[in-house]
Image 1 (cartoon, helix red, strand yellow):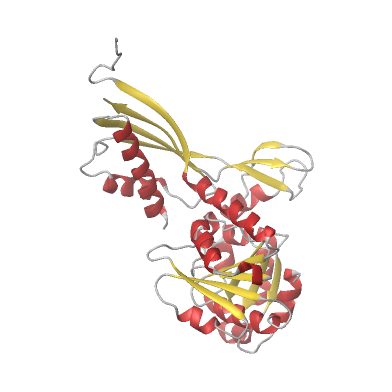
Image 2 (cartoon, helix red, strand yellow):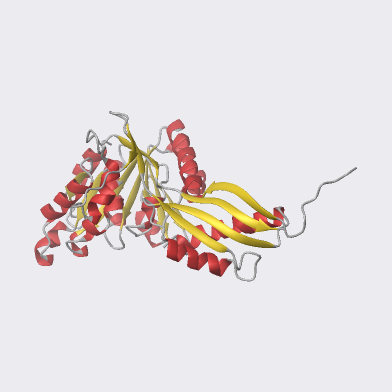
Length: 222
Length: 125
C-alpha cells in the first residue's frame, strides 16, 4: 500500500478556534442548570479585599436561615478563616481555595456544588476572591451578582472598575457609618453606579451597625 | 492577573497539538482577545514566552489581535459594533456595550468581545 506522508520541513497551518474563556462560560451554564433543576438560587458576592463580603453574607444568612436552607461557598487563596466565620446553625459551608488564582471559576464551583447537599438548600451565597477585576471575566452560573464596595476604599472605586459594576444586579455600599470620617459621599458612588449600570440597585449599608441588610434582601427578591 | 493561567492553558494546548502532529517547530501562533476581557496582549505574550521555553514553540511568532465588542439588541435587532462617540470617556467605552446605540435599549446581548481565542497555529514537520 502506498502511504502518503508529508515531506520533511512541510509547513502546516492548523485552524484551532479554541476559546479558553468560553470553556468557563459553558461550565457556568452547566452549573446554572444543575442549580435550576434543584430549585436553588445562587448569588455571587464580589468586591475588593476588606470591603465586607463575609460580613454581609454572615448577616444575610442570620436573617434568612430560619426561612430558607442556606449554603455558602467561600472562596479564598489559602485560608479557611471566612468559612469558619460563616459556620452557623443550619448553614452548610464549603471552603474553596484557589491557590494562586485571583478569581473563582465555574469548574471550582462545580466541584464545590458536588460537596454540598444541594437538595437540602434553597439559597447559596458564593463569596468570590477579593478582587474587582478578574471575577468579571469568569461567570460562575449564579442567578445574581452582588458587588460590595465600601466607603473606606475612597471616592474613585466605582469609576475605576466599571466592568464589575456593569455586571452587578445589586451593589452594597458598605461602611456608611464611616463615610463622614472618610470624606466620601455615598450618593456620589450611587450616581457613578447609575451611570455605568442603570439596572443595578445600589443600597447603602453598614454591616457593623447591621443597617440596610433587609433592603439588600428585598433588592435580591429573596 | 489571570493572564498567567490563561497563557498556561493556551501553551498546554499548543504543545499537545505539536505532539499530535509530530511537529518539529511552531512558526506562528494567532490569538484573538476580546476587548471586553481583562486580558492584556503584552502580559499574555510574556507568559507564553515563559511557558514555551525549551519547547518547539520557543521561537514562534506570537500574533495577538484585539477584537471589538459586537452586540445584538433584543428590541430593535441592531447587530454590530458599539458606536463610541469622541467625547465619551474610558468609562463610557465599557458602559456602551450594555445599551443599544440605535434605540438606547439596555436589553442587549454581547455576542462577541469576550473571547480568548487560539485561532490557528503554523507548524513545521
